[in-house]
Image (cartoon, rainbow over all chains, first blue to last red; front, side, top):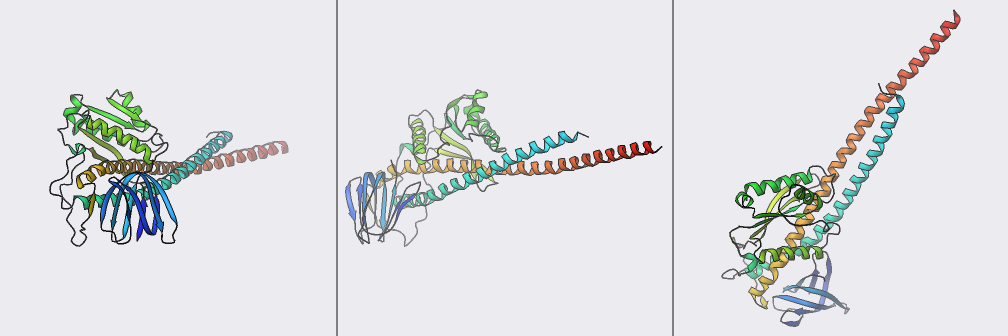
Length: 80
Length: 295
């Protein structure tokens, strides 16, 4: 599945991943392949994702929103 | 005809002026390009945000109630006038200022007469003008353009949202130069607050409609996203005005350089004519002297 992390000032990440973990407003959750379509707001916290090569990366965000559909995930975030 | 030396000094001074205007043109062009990149970076975010907004609102029976969307009768109005910090950019600032005064005295004539209209100046030129005329000024910000980034925008946006929510103003409008290309910018007047609910609901595109899971709820999501869209709008307006400023300066400096070239050409012609006249005169003197000796 494809992940994009965008802020108003730049594109932080774009690429294939196999796991995304985000700090949802109602609690942290993970997105794996073929997740049901979802739109959720995010609170301040860490976004963690694992690329197809198995590299784990994290990004600190100051809130935002995530949309996932058809294995295409977009995170609109804001930095502190 | 002016003396040889005088013309020579004038040519040198015009040449150095040309060098300055040329350099300023280059600087403006470089800044413009850098700013354009920022606009390009913003675009995917803005597009996606709008798309998400549409997805959330799609199929929502009645639109969400949000204090930022409260459309009160516009008794107290705030006009945000966006100008530049520096001059030498042609009619850029004057146009924006004239437009602001025009909007204040025509569209908001009643509020203007009742002294219920204030300005907020972003950019030094507008602030200076409003102060010198003693127009009601809510505040001014001249630092934002020193380092135009999203964090600064958020701060200002929060300030305006608070002014609106506290009921100090019922309507907040922008006056700014919208960037079209380096030579063309469009003076724009648009409403910032209240947020206008999308009455012409986006036509639901068949096939694209998805059964999303919404977390926490649709209403809360919309309320969460509205301030974000406002920030994006504000950021875009500032970037636009900044681009337009550099575009205007580029054009103005280009013209100045052209004028300097023209002037140099003319002066050089004068100089050569004067030089030739001087030489001719000298030869005549010598010849005249020689003739006199012969006799």
